[in-house]
Image (tube, rainbow, N blue to C red):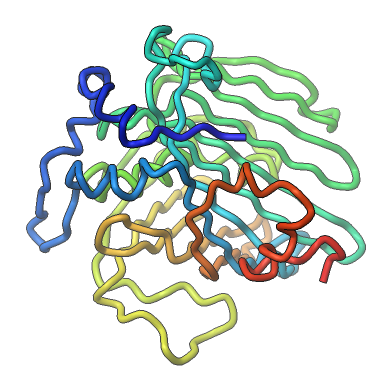
Length: 328
């Protein structure tokens, strides 16, 4: 269950928002290419502070075991109050009395089957609303029929504290620290806070937790080159089709790693609220073969989904483009 701020609470907490950088979103800036780079406060509040979350369904093609498997994904964006030291959701009646701050939370869920074998993955990002901030916390879990892996990153004053719990012997349980650099998972939220928040050029960055866990790579700071490109073509999971959005209405943010060789492209709308249209990942395995994962947007829904958890709402799944409770 989530608690999102209503507009009344948002107005009362303006001073606290300023302290944590939300007023960095107050200037409506235009980049040289004409991209509206930041949100006007009134538009931001009208979209995000109405007691609902934004849910988007995607058709997914996931590369795994040298093959491509069909599945589905869901992105859930919502505002919540978070206690910055404990880094947990504030569930009190008056979060401001405990110094809690508003964050944008992303839950990214992906599910697919590899033959007779199921995968379920979820990553959560808790990102302050300031335009230049880093996430407070990132978690990811992967459940498969062989076992379970869970990883968590907490931002501290001296960098990232990283914990890993894994079923697999070579990973097992571990704890380590990383420098307080950018994270790939955090960039998904930066997109929603406006393109001006996206770094470009050569970056020190922590790769996405899904990729590192699926390929059982040690989490480490890598070099990547980032670019924000106009006139992006929509991501399609099964080739081109008619009636698609014009390229001029979409932007493409690309990360390209050289070691190991991998790229991530996220395509999103040019204008506020910068909804994500799809994404594509490519990586080259040790044999030199390239593999592609892609997701294409289905339905977008604003909903207080935590109040729709009863059986009578099961029909919403089909309308949203997800399998129903019987797996159909």
